[in-house]
Image (tube, rainbow, N blue to C red; front, side, top):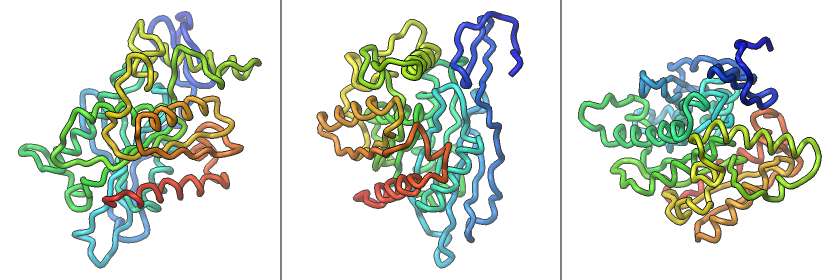
Length: 333
């Protein structure tokens, strides 16, 4: 890829992102974007989708996915919501990328839920907490939708078909990190319309100053992972922050108590060949210690976000089933 700047490179994660001294950013992973589906087929076998802009100034929008509905009672049928935060190290990917568009179509169809996929501001142009602010703002928007606040434009799909008392949070990689942050912030809210039922974290991207098992090995692969992960945190965290900042380390010395998380149940996925596996396991153990209801699923023989990069993996349907079972088993589902 030809450089778009003659300025010196200040950070590069190979095949991922390159940042120049003059502020130019090259995203080396660029899958492009795809438009939403037709909005006129939610009564048959197709998932419908559309984009709803929440903030024209920041560019934040959500892509809504409406599953096929039962013809017998289409006007009154209510289904749960899954608010989903895409991954990409806070720096790359999009709610409109073909990878996430395909995945959320599938989740909506198989789980029979309305998916709310969030397009948030990305680092390094917008360092954290920008992404956390944007994603938490989506829950605030959903609450206003639920109670039909005067002066707020109510989306007709949500008004007709959203069961706002059955809201789940989900995300992969950095998106899973966002799930945690949103859950901590939500503990300070007592929403009138929205009720969080659970959280799904797939291969979460957490960090910390103290090196742990997956970061202590020798060899170029481990060294490359550690250097890349540290670098991504360095361009994503507030300037001067270390990896024990609460935005990075969920159970660090300055982090909020995990017992305050707003949702009652958590499902965590880790992958055997993922360098982040032990960060995910540590998070699971910390939640257990905090008295939270949490499940851990370890997928053998797979790497980071395999379900997105290799959707034909034999383990992808097993992951999907665990996600569906988790949402179906919610006490209020």
